[in-house]
Image (cartoon, rainbow, N blue to C red; front, top):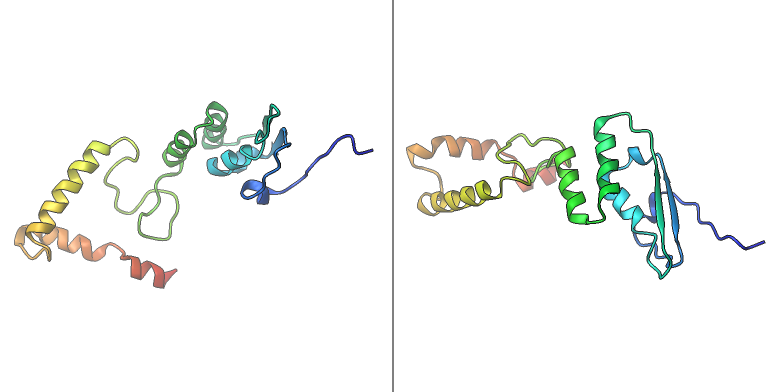
Length: 159
């Protein structure tokens, strides 16, 4: 009779759909989604003046699944959610094909080691300024490591 308007959708609505009157969302199997997806989905309701609710229905089989749900229920701050996602999934490769997990070269915890990263950046800038080709004998190990790390061009060709 048209008294209730319901939209049933897949995760295709996670971006680009704006239904200002949407006031209730139920996410089934929420433990199977990543934090970014859950955050984006939740953001589809409450865009208008009406109060809104997002219900996550889940049966998390893993500690990580429960952690994702706890994070999305505990905050609406996208930055906090991104940090938790990084902690749970790992940073992946800065230059490479893997979008999650531990990188082959692990040098710091992101977030958490910002001071160490700043010191490392300063040290690297000094060394590159003093010896751009890493030809000095004391830089032989760095030169060898630099030759083993994927370059962006190699990554693009391999992907």
